[in-house]
Amino acid sequence: MTDMKPWYLSRTIWASLVTVLIAGGSLAGIRLDGIDEGALTDTLMQAATAVAGIVAIAGRFAARSRIG
Image 1 (cartoon, rainbow, N blue to C red):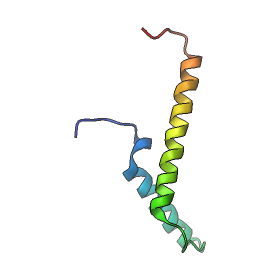
Image 2: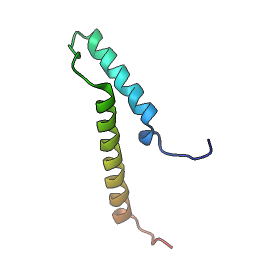
Image 3: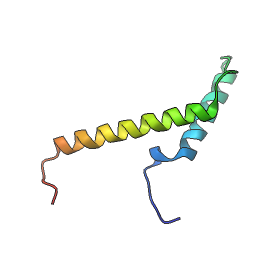
Image 4: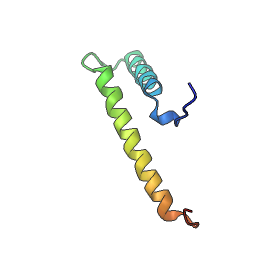
């Protein structure tokens, strides 16, 4: 495994975060019976990818050096 990617594009990280949030919600007494963990993970991955794209575009517009 030599390819590197940002942590926020890792499906494993997002699935783990979803699991922790669902467990925390259950401990807090929030009913989470109808949540599909796979679908929630996919949605969060899409949101993270969209945010990463927006940040990249904003960073390019804010940059003070040319791309060469």
